[in-house]
Image (cartoon, rainbow, N blue to C red; front, side, top):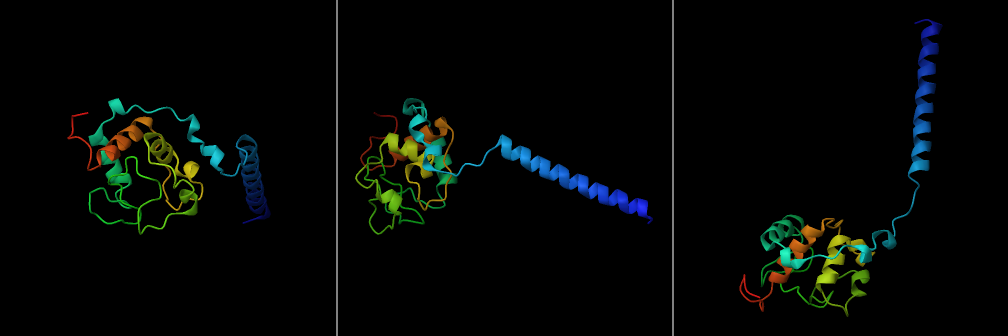
Length: 165
């Protein structure tokens, strides 16, 4: 290779570095850095969910796929990585015996798992309890959350048989 080839290689490296730096700079301008805080995930602005149109069967599938690895759903099943979700409807938050909850979830221990609280939790767990130990990003779809909440509400020993109100 002669000196002309080396000059072309050097120019290509300089131009490539310039393009990379320029792209990085433009991305920093267009997408500024903002640390993740609970206000980013504020669920007060979430749309309301409608349990009247919820599909319990679809909720069972979603819950089994996304929650079943860490939570059990049947009466008498022990806690897994997360507490059992059987009889969660209107249960006090962070109240399962023999389960070690994060301090950010224990803040809510005087509240109950209502439809509203379940909706907030399922939408963005980190907004509900910022230092939660649960590694789950949440369900963005209102319909999916409604389906899961309807399924969770059906997991109780004092609900009427399916199809009755």
